[in-house]
Image 1 (spheres, protein in one colour):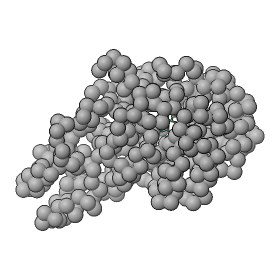
Image 2 (cartoon, rainbow, N blue to C red):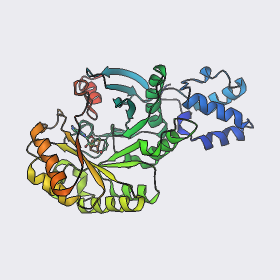
Image 3 (cartoon, helix red, strand yellow):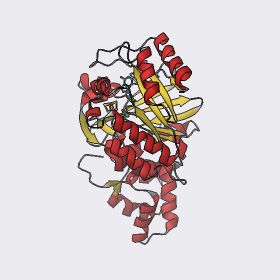
Length: 354
Ligand code: SAH
Ligand code: SF4
């Protein structure tokens, strides 16, 4: 589809809205149900691939809606075979990344919520790109469907979704939540509540809103530092949403929804991986139902830091559990050989002028 195509994407509409639209046109709800099934179960990427939908319905749909995309630009498979990265082009030519991961046999899609990111975290390839634009709900759903289509060919289905690709999902709250609702639909992709995880840099009003609206997502908060001064140096938006306010919002979320939170910590050698840092994390998160995910830094062109060594990661973990009873995982970012870190593949293509 060209950028001049202003028709709404079919992936923008939750089932109730799609059904209402067909009803307005005096088409039976049976057709709406069939269309939904084609879209989300059969993974059809064109109206022509929906033969059981009467021609008059298809013609009407074609006038109002479009389907298809985002288009595959490039695909890379990691040598360990567990990660596949898709570089996808949006209708206006911007590219985003979607990653397909296989963990313990379960297929997880990591999708982007924005092209670029406005938050400017110094170690992040997407942050180094700056903000381009928000993705629409349809573009977020479209990434998941690209993955679903591939899995379907292998007789598998998507089980988990993480909003941890490019962009800050709580900076694009409405589109992200609309996409979550569409992907959770029981007659469609049917992703379970405990199967969707949203990762945020710490947009405090967004966390409070998630809690107030009791949104069915797990929350991961990218912490990276346990004092305000250290955090601002890595995550500049911490100036706007300071650490004490962030932790207060996290407590509110946990209490209100009776859910735990994951904290993410990119381990950077010498910078946030010492014993003192581990103790500071333990004290900061005291009393919160949580787990800390430690991820050795993925080096990027725009940041001089190095990933922590394995011993430093182990020491960090040991302090958290032995002194504070805090569970943690050390997760190697998978697929390093295909630049599977956030924004790295799109960044590399930009540098090459692709
Ligand atoms: N904007 C959201 C989600 C996308 S980033 C957020 O910041 O949480 C997903 C995760 O990747 C975040 O935890 C982020 O801190 C982390 N990340 C980004 N660049 C990284 C890098 N170079 N090495 C390790 N982790 C990185
Ligand atoms: Fe944006 Fe997340 Fe990257 Fe920070 S880490 S720049 S919030 S995508």
